[in-house]
Image 1 (spheres, rainbow, N blue to C red):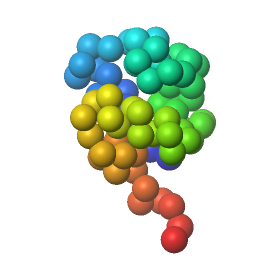
Image 2 (image 1 turned 90 degrees about the horizontal axis):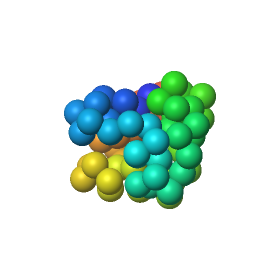
Image 3 (image 1 turned 180 degrees about the vertical axis):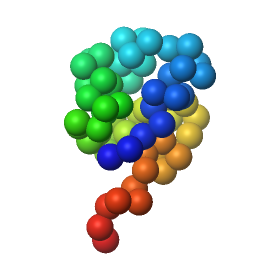
Image 4 (image 1 turned 135 degrees about the vertical axis):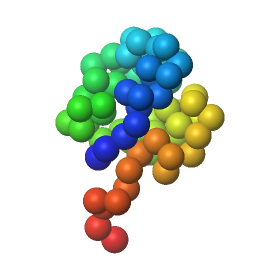
Length: 67
């Protein structure tokens, strides 16, 4: 799943480690989400979006999800 986490981190001058600590996960998880190898759980997606003051839909791209 595509996200704009990398861009948001760069805008806020955050490392993957800093974001991971802020949302209660590991740097490896943030890396995997950014390279689309892992889809964040709903709780983690919420924490990431909330950290940046955005909605989940503003951070994660759901256009490829079948309904």
